[in-house]
Length: 130
Image 1: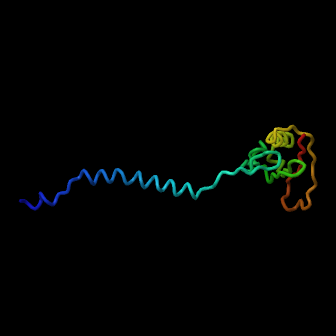
Image 2: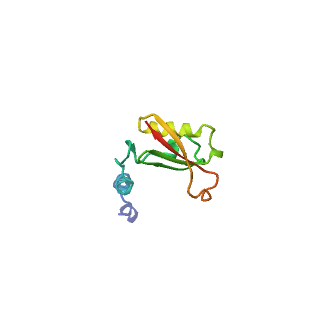
Image 3: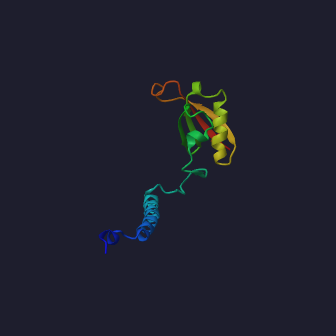
């Protein structure tokens, strides 16, 4: 017999093994990575707003205008740059934030900042929802 005829292996089992291994490895990798990823949360802010809500985006103001949005006992507090926001920024933000709670706007109050030099040019408002 010829040495070369015995040296050649049957390619069918090797190729079948190559086809099975990558999907199995891929599935294992997906399961491993998904177990390490962020969990969905069922935490809610007061008013029933999901904690995962992007509050700066929810104000409906330009992203570069919004500095801080926070939920308070009375409603919402917003700090923004009026120079980067539309003229009706107070009303737009109030309507959007109260809408997150399925409520209407009661009133909006300007708040004087304790340290206005910390972030010059910003405006702080309190939003009360009805």
